Length: 270
Image (tube, rainbow, N blue to C red; front, side, top):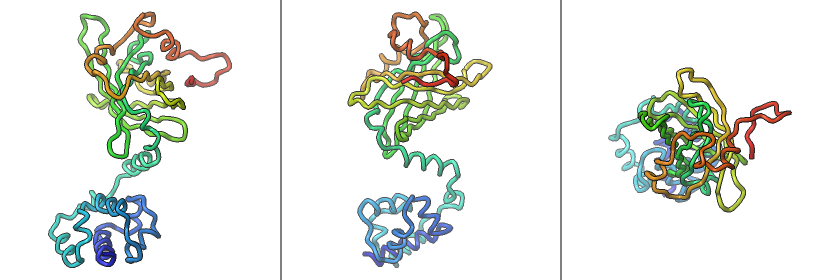
């Protein structure tokens, strides 16, 4: 198995510009990779799966006798040079995903998100946010429902992004997927309690009004659970007056965008 596998692996690598390029893309240690290429080590089941996923072959194929594998590869379409060349932004995002996909499982589920509206000054906005794991990364969707008055048209916004956990902060980056006109970043404090109730932090974005003013606001995530009645939850989303009895007083206080004496920066509050 080891000799045929190593020859097959060398063949697959020959379609890339170098062994170093393959190691970099796979995030694999070069000395260990050389052991596989030289037939001095047998890959574990997990490593074998990584090779197959990367090169686009099946496990039983990569273990075939080399002459048989060579014929199989020769008749398959080869990836173009553009497909083999990973863009810089793809590499950076992949690196972030590898760094911070652990530690987020306890935060998966649905939240009401609260912050003072950037587009409607003096109003508090409640949104519905869902964090979910897809394979080895955590993605999320934020959905907003805007209606200034009962007679106005309802506007829906959908933000799609990914979350990363670095040391002791949750970093979230998303874009408005319906218009492609805004990117938002949110940084939250994690909770060290067993039960997730609320997360607080800051969000940076652009107001949806005509001036498109860059704004920063305090934000609160109120945990709802791993599953919810989405239609009922979404009906509760929208713009609220600051004195509305439908919003908990502690949330109003947590999202107040005030600066205390002696503070030199607009800071999140734990």
